[in-house]
Image 1: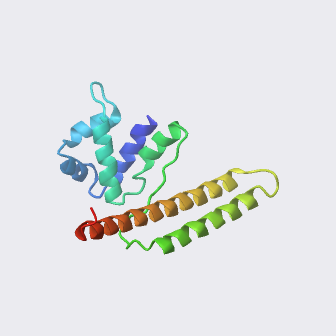
Image 2: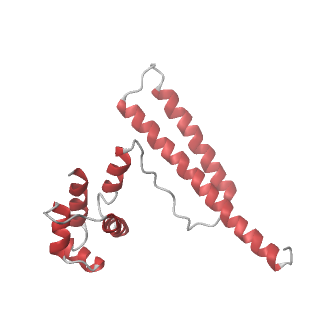
Image 3: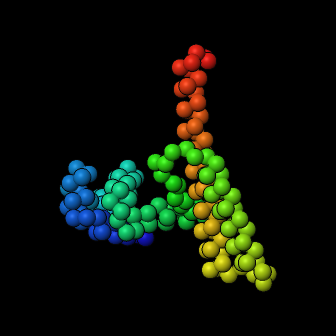
Length: 161
């Protein structure tokens, strides 16, 4: 029921509540309510759950990723926010950011293990810093891919292919 509770909170926190969300989904509020409650003969489908999550995420609803987090946690995984690639592909700056995050991870892990133990809070800090490192690496790869597209377009225009 924990998953349904997460969906219920997402729907409740959506701007305009269930009625507004259902209007966006083309679904009746009474049907969605029954699906979320798990009423006899009603189940929330995976596609609808995904649509709810996307709509709530786009609307910046608090707890919009709770359903996904619960699902990831059930299989010993974690969600990792990736950067949006709106910036130009300054790959050297992105490489510098990656190296900075790597240094920060080394510092956090070293501090966490200083006494030979790793408490919950230290583990949480290490995992958060790891997420920052992976995010910076993803941004670097996005920049390299964008630069590659530019390079290949110029090469093709110049008759290189």
